[in-house]
Amino acid sequence: MACLKLGTKPDAFRLDDHTWQCIGGLPSDVTIEIGGTSFNLHKFPLISRSGLLSKLIGDSPNEDGPICAIHLNDIPGGAKVFELIAKFCYDVKLEVTSHNVISLRCAAEYLQMTDDYGDENLITQTEIFLNEAFTTWSDTMNALESCEEVYSDAEELDLISRCIDSLAVKACAGPSAYIMHNTSAASAAKPQSLTDNWWYKDVSFLNLHLYKRVIQAMEANGMRPEIISGSIVGYAKKYIPLMNRQSSFNDASHSKPVYTPSEADQRALLEEIVGLLPNRKKIVGTKFLIRLLRSAMVLHVSPSCKENLERRVGAQLDSAHVDDVLIPNQGFNSIDTLYDVDCFQRMLDYFMSMESSSIHNSPCIVEEGPFEEDVPQSLTSVTSVANLVDLFLADVAADVNLKLSKFQSVAAGVPDYARPQSDGIYRAIDIFLKAHPWLADCEREQICRLMNIQKLSLDASTHAAQNERLPLRVIVQVLFFEQLRLRTSIAGWFFVSENEDQMSNKNGGEVVRAQEPRRMSEMRERVLELERECEKMKFEIREVKTKKSWIFFCKRRRHRRY
Picture 1 (tube, rainbow, N blue to C red):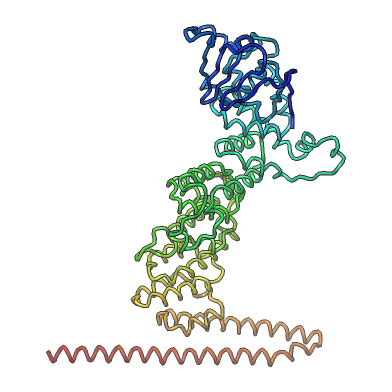
Picture 2 (picture 1 turned 90 degrees about the horizontal axis):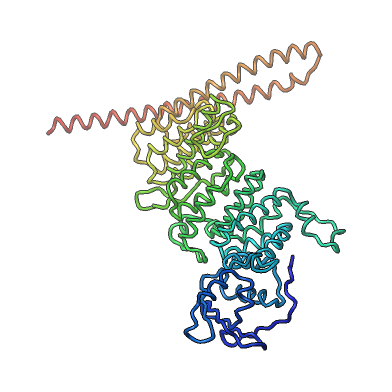
C-alpha cells in the first residue's frame, strides 16, 4: 500500500479526555471546536497554512481574553481528520495513505490550504499522492471506499469520478495489468493466474450508488457484457437475501427472511440491479432471472421493473426449466391458482412475439423489448418452449381453480408445428380432465381440440383409446388414425418387402426371407389388437346410446303421467 510520510518533528500532541493539548512551548492562544472535541493550539502555525483559519482568527473578537475560539463543525472528516491537519501545520510526522487521502484532500480544500499559504501545502501534497495511488488497483479501491465518509465534498471535487474512472480502466485492461501493478518485486518471479472476474470481490463491498457507477464506467470503457453480468449476479446474491433462498409456495408468501437489509432496501436494490443488467439476450442466465423475478414479486417492486424481468425471461424462455417457471402466486387465496399462470402466459406471449418478429425481420432489433435481438428464433427453440408449456400445464392442470379458458390460452400459445408429438399436451389434458370432472361434454371436446391426434405416439394412442375421461368422438378419432397408421405401415412393409425380394433374388440371399414370417406375425397381432379395440368401442357406444334412449323414454312417460 502506498504511503506518503510528511513532517519531521516527533508527536507533540496529547489527548486529555476530549481535548487535544500541544505539549511544551508557549501556552495555546486559539481553541478549535469540532463537535465534542477541542484542540488547544497556536495561531501562527494555523494561519500560515490555512486561508480559512487565517480569516476566522483575524475576524474573531478578543472579548473572552487572549484565547480565540473557532468552531469548525462542518469540516470534512471531523475531528479525526483535523488531528492530521494540525500535525501537518506543526510539521509533526504523519502518514498519508489511500485510506485517509480523500478526507485530507476535502478538508484541505475546506480550509483553503493552497500554496498561497506555504509551499507544498496540503492540497498539493494530497494531489501528488492521489496520482500515485491511482496507479494501483488496491489503493484506488481504498480511496473510493473512503469517499463514503466525505461523499458530498468528494463529489464536488470530482474525486469519486477520478477513482471510478481509474478502476474502470484497470478492470478493462485485464488481469495482466492488475498483476503488473500490484505484485511486489519479491514475488514478481512467482507465476500468478487470474481470470476475468478478478475484480468481482473488491467491488462487491461498495455501496450500491458507488457500485452502480463503477459498473457503468466499466461498460463505457468496453468491458464485455458477460463479465459485467457476472459481477451483477454476485452482487445481487450478496445483498438480496431472498435470492439465496429456494422459494416455495409455503415460504414465499408467509415467511420473513432473517437478514439485515430491510424489505424496502432490498426492493430498491433489486430495481437498481435490473436496470444495470446488460441489454443483450443470453448474457444473464435464465435461472438467475427467474429467481430475480420471484424475489421481485415477494418484495412488490414497481410494475415497470416486474415487466422488465418478465420480458427478459420471456426472451430466453427456451432455456428455462419447468421447476423454475412454477412461480408461487403471491396473491393466493381460495379462488386463485397455486402458481402464477398469468405471469407464465405473459412470458410466453413475449417469446412468441419475438419469434414472429424474427421471422419477418432477420436480423432485427426488438424495439419494445428490454434488449437487442441479434439472432432470429430457431425451430429448435420454439420446440423447446412448446415442451416447456406442456410440462408447465401438466403441473398446474391438477389445480381445481385453473379455469378452462386459461388452460386453453396457455396451450394455444405455441403453434401446432412446434409440437413434433402431442404426447405432452395430451398428458396435460388428461390431468386437467381428471381434476375437473364436472366439465360438460362440449367443454371436453373443446379442450381436446388443443392436441393433434395424428401426432400421438403409439403408447399415447393406446392410452387414449382406453381413456374414459375423453369424449367418445375423440376416442373414435384416435382409433381411426391408429388404424390408418397401421394400414400405411402395412403398405410400406409390402413395398419394402417387394424391394427386398428383388434384391435377394439378385444376390441369392436367404436372410430377408427368414425374417418375413416374424414381420407378418407382428403385423397380424397388431391388426387383431386394433380389431378388438374397435369391437369394444362399438359395444360401448351402443351401450351409451341404449342408456340415453331409455332415459329419454322414462322422461316422456313421466311427463304424460302428470
